Length: 132
Image 1: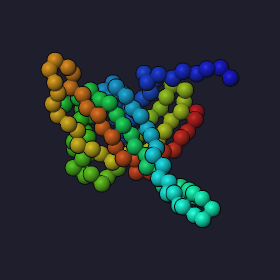
Image 2: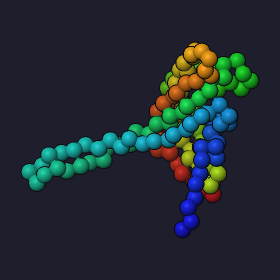
Image 3: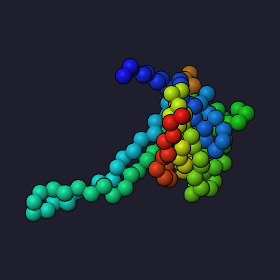
Image 4: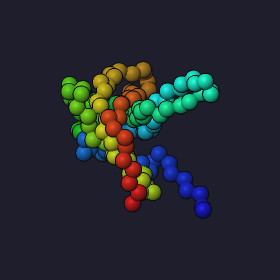
């Protein structure tokens, strides 16, 4: 099997039907499994209880820009229990579809740097992987 290298620049990110990869500096979908450990008379036993998925985004702030991600997220956060549809697609055809709960974006920054923010959003369900 040959080596395949996919860079972050080969990922597109769509949230609530709008593509935002131009504002995104990093996107990481990750899982933290919830595993309970039981101490039995025979030793330790493990039970996988749940999965806690998150989407962590590194972003360039775009307040006031047309189709602003930050303004869209600010509006979505007004209904914090309503998940937003998300799709991450790589150039190799791997597509991850899932829903995230909105977060309140930060405002501000440090001189002379670009305004940036990092969001960690809870994923409401297990992502669906499709390979095309």
